[in-house]
Length: 266
Length: 295
Image 1: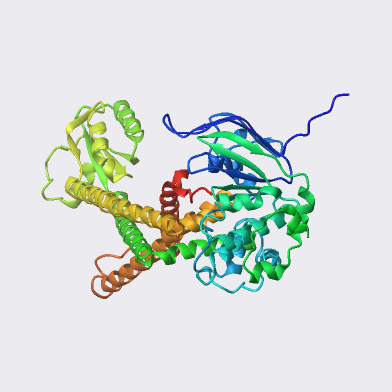
Image 2 (image 1 turned 180 degrees about the vertical axis):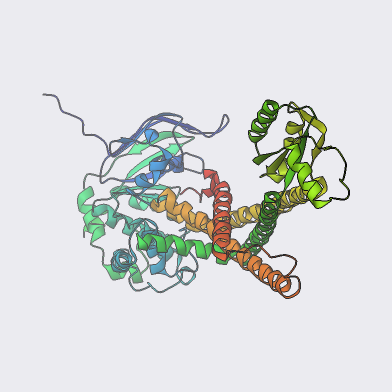
């Protein structure tokens, strides 16, 4: 009896990207990502990990091959429809991109107003979203009054305004120390446990090593996928364990390095 | 809908507040350009109206050769009526002209033969076309080419004045309008630079193309509207001052054309808003300029 292969949520099929004649960012990359996966795109600068994310946000277009997201071939959509595509995902930039003159809640509300939420809807939803990323107690702070980790949480909160099923994070721990990096990873894992597919581009080996057991690690080098380490079998249990991490621990205590999934389940 | 409008209006106001001086320069230059164009436009229309009033009283006398037959005279009159810019054409028989002269100057005309030929009295409706009309009449059959009389200097002076006003309007108004355009364009570009982070956030979260662009269009249009309003106020103030002076000192000589604040203001505001919009569209037409940055 033949078994039908499930359609991947995201698929890169023989994708190449040439920025110009001399610079090739990706060379015949093929990669399938299923719904609900937590994927690290690991590689040094110039390896092509950010380009993979930019293909999904349609910041760049493939030179050859196909990029498919949620059944839609992204190369075929017009520039006019890119905003609609982006409303299906949450994007977390490396530099947080927060508005310095606006408070935490205003930063999230601004993004909501920009995509069509009314003032009243934003007022009702912003506290809920900020609570979700454990920033409920810092709503009136300005970005410069926050730690790097807190600023990244606000950036994640802003990415959650559409309740996206896909969250893309480009070097989310690039500006953070180890403690804050792990805080952010806990948060991303929690969102993953709630059903979101997470793609994280990073060169931070320390973070990836600590998350090895709960994620899939795709390593890129020179625009090619050189390894693809699949999820650990006890993924679901582990993810749920992350999701149940005490809220206070995340907010108030420095994050503890994770050694093994067993330790998490203990 | 109102909420969306409030958001984009708020963004536009924020944009203008980021560089008040540049916005002020753009608005005042639009105002001065519209003031100049409006003022010279008013002057041109006044001159045109005056010329039309003058041409109502203005006639060309065209004399036939002495032996002109009646059918030739009728043909020439018909042909004269068909010339563009010609109003009424009246045939003045030579007997009638002589009778009038004899009545006015009985002693001088005593014992003389009628020296008059038949003539046409031609009313001109478009003063500026007089040279063409005269030329056409001179070539009519039976007309003596050197016996077409008209009051040339007044008409020529008015024509020259109207041309001068037209050129002044075109050159000065055009130059100022171009400067205003550059200022609006630069103001929008500065806003884009100042608000690059906001643009990036909007693009990250999937704000529509219009939400990203509309604040810049509103900014350009607002600068145009404000320029139009200030230009109208300046123009009205100038008109009132001159009008008061004319009424007080020169009322017996000339009556000024009425100045409708509303239609003039409306025209200048429409001109300003259209121009502001065009300049802002030019400033944002390139999508690369609005790229807030990738993730």
